[in-house]
Length: 330
Length: 95
Ligand SMILES: [Fe+2]
Ligand SMILES: [Fe+2]
Ligand SMILES: [Fe+2]
Image (cartoon, rainbow over all chains, first blue to last red; front, top):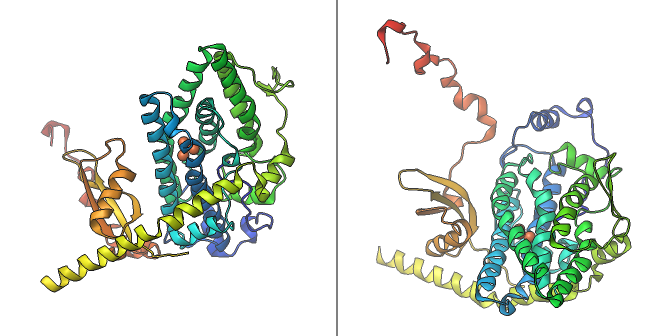
């Protein structure tokens, strides 16, 4: 998902009886559905794991602006341009809500930024793919934001209060994102042959990477088991991927597009679709930093940070000067 | 890489006239004026507010979760502060 393959303590989940009293009380609060707040006691593993997860999620929102930002100046109409601009601006907001939530865990915003820029922290694999045509704006909103929603809706109930509250705000805004994408796909699906072709091509390229967003099967992952016990992960990766496929296939049919998977078939017995796994070798390769656009994305973020340095410094200097003048006047 | 740690501000927004300001989140800004401008962009993109307060996070004093019990116990044994404590006969009518 926006946070993929987040590592936890690496140890198996402790039973309540194996825990020290403080940790046991903490786990019992989580089991009872209580929210954990910044000043509450929490196990070090919980805190670290959440910083990694929320940080990765925040970075994904920020880096996620780049593939769509790529098309703002080339949107086909002024209305589409204004809508895309608003959507991308929302993603900046999502990044900010999440950075704030991460900061309540004792990491600074600047530390998080540095870890993204020097590659110590990751962002979602999906944003390492290029957006080649306008139809990709449709596919990204429909599929990528659609997949994100699958994961984010249950996270509104996550155990860490600031994270859950950030998720509530984000979810309110995400359905606009998905709908504007689907709207682009509908227009192109009803358009000329060339437009239909572009829409199909966008679906072909984004289908696999969208399925990868949920991460590889984690049925046997100790990290996921721990995260689920802490309620910072609410569903297994396969469960969410299945839900996404079941929701998306009929939408593709409505658009008159073909999901690029010859094994896709409705399975009456399980009440869901059977489908092919995406190319996991490709996924791991992207995570290792070899995505088609990884270098460009990292360069763009580093450039933005470096080029903005004089603005940040200037504003701080201005604030200091104003404060000094105010003190002098008193 | 330059880091210059803009201070953290807590943002409170009045959702509509007549309501109190409510905490919505925090953000970094060099000064109060920019904190309010940034809050407008971060927290009111969909007309979520009619008024914004920004206060430096470091200026907030907070109770600590550990005194959950003791800090609030004075209220534990004063159920009579609630109107439902008193049985008023039906004949008396609305009260
Ligand atoms: Fe987002
Ligand atoms: Fe997104
Ligand atoms: Fe989005």
